[in-house]
Amino acid sequence: MSLEAIAALREPVRRTVYEYVAARAEPVSRNEVAEGVGIGRTLAAFHLDKLTDAGLLEATNAPRAGGPGAGRPAKLYRRSAAEHTVTVPPRDYRLLAGVLASAIERVGAEPAAYAAAAAQGAKLAGGDTLGRLAALGYEPYEDADRTVRLRNCPFDAVAHSHPGLVCGLNLAMLEAVVGDGGQVVRLDPGPTGCCVAIHSKNNER
Amino acid sequence: MADSHLAQLNIARLRAPIDSPVLADFVARLPEIHDLAERSPGYVWRLQDDSGDATAFRPFEPDVIVNLTVWESIESLRAFVYRTAHLEPMRRRREWFVPLDAEHLVLWWIPAGTLPSIEEAATRLEALRRNGPSAEAFTLREPFPASIDDRRSQTA
Image 1: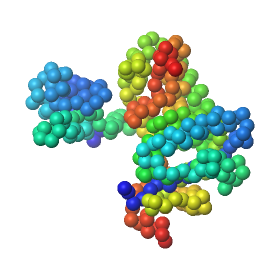
Image 2: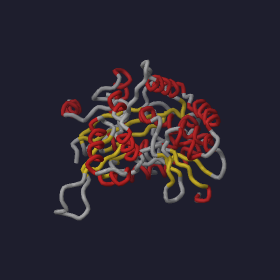
Image 3: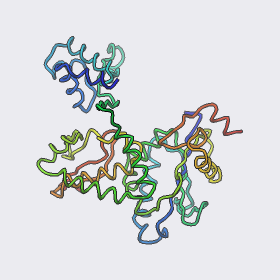
């Protein structure tokens, strides 16, 4: 399944369609995709269907504004929560990460894990913070308050099974990546995405 | 409204007495965390004494505190525990608690409208520690759905 999913991205236009949808905070309609990518609606629909069939996107029927009689609901697309990984030869770092996380919890070595994460973060620091966070897969964006939020959790599966540990480790690492230049890094979880937010000190109350 | 509610027990061994400086930050956060829980979607009930606190209950061992709550669903509990400001004290729990050498959190289904007792909670934790996760005693990592069989075992 994962190999087929990733192979579906080989077609350049389809990949552009995928990247357009994946980068959006809200689900998008076929028409928005067609306009955003600069292709016809029929072609956009074709690629959106292929990406949905491959399990890379999810389609939902959104209630359309305008109340009763406003017509058939528009199909909206968003990135699927399913993870696709292909490694050749086979590797399973996620299984290993889960075992190590359980071991840390058993002996209560969370402080050591946070210290190791901070040391790793210091190595990853440097240059433009947003660019660095993007390269690490966090998909950063600035909200209306100029708070930097992170749309993607690169450690999602292990954060799900070991949240206190993994979110604490992630916070320690990102504090070191961001450094102490006028920003405060905090746990500030929303319903989805990474639980860490980077607040501008000017906005601190 | 669902027929079943989710009961949750978790216990923690204090690193120092509850009124010591080591625990001061944890104790100071409790009212805010209790308030957050009570405002969370799907919250039903929590064990508390007249002061609104539960840290005086020590049914297991003198240095082990308990947290006994009821939620409408696993999703509502999970959303509160992991996707709110509750995550920050979870991150810091090692400053306040020493690890237990066995499972410290157990979940089980109860008929909606009833409340769990500490005795029942202790039995469920024992079952989890003895048999691993099952429909009668499970964890957030390995949850079980509320089923007819579940409810029959409640009354058995």
